[in-house]
Structure formats: C-alpha cells, structure tokens
Image (cartoon, rainbow, N blue to C red):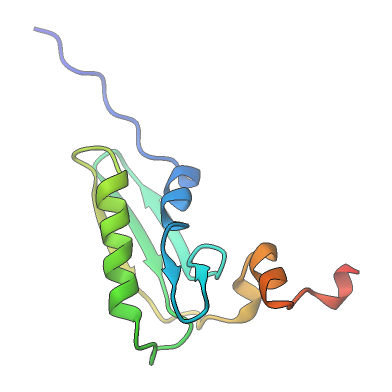
Length: 113
C-alpha cells in the first residue's frame, strides 16, 4: 500500500490572487490592493489570514469577511481550511495600499514623480 505524497501548502501569491476577488463595495477596490490583508500563513491543512477594515466602524466588515471565507473555501485545495482573523493593530492607513490602489484613487506619492 502506497501513501499519497504530502500536499504542498498553498503559496502566498495564489492566496493573494484568490483574495483579490474580494472587493470592498464602499470603495470599489479589492482587499489586497486596498492594504487590508496584513498576514498570510499557510500550511497544507490551514491558511491563516489576518486582515482589517479601513475602520472598526465599517458597516460591511462582516460581509467582506464572509466573502473572504467563501472565496478561500472555493479556491483552496480540498482539506485545507481557512482561518480568518479580523485585527485592528496596526490601524489601517492609506499608505498600506498597493501602488495600483494609490493610483486608482489619485494618491500617488509626490516623491515618486
């Protein structure tokens, strides 16, 4: 009897690609480029995502978190669970956005030009 080879953990890039499908409807931008994803830690059995909202008072926080869970449940390999943790430290700031996100809002760094 042969055993199946161990499954590799999903990589950071593939998880971020999945998370880019989740858009904050208030601003029309995906949560990765918006800078809401703080940490990703993956093993073959579990993916941990620590993320935040632009504000603790965000009325759509639960909806966005549920969408993250749904996207990961559909996109991760079978047997790999998603653990989503909402954190508030450090507080979100515009500087956490990707360059594409900053350009989207016209918030380029003046020192870039």
